[in-house]
Length: 80
Image (cartoon, rainbow, N blue to C red):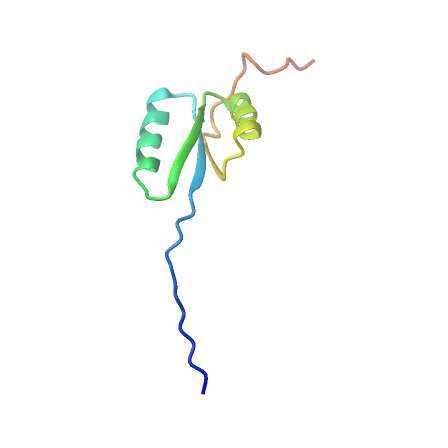
């Protein structure tokens, strides 16, 4: 009979997160909530959808927490 001993170790997988919301207060509260969880780290914050896309391309986060209701009308190309 063959006896096998397994040595298991705990592996923490860090999840990088981008927070996108037009409210600074909401971003700050979300950051505090996220960073209170083990294994989660906020890599960046975005102030609108366009900023979120730019930062997501650069930072390549594992997860984006996005407020789908905010829009950046000032930065959006005009439609004719």
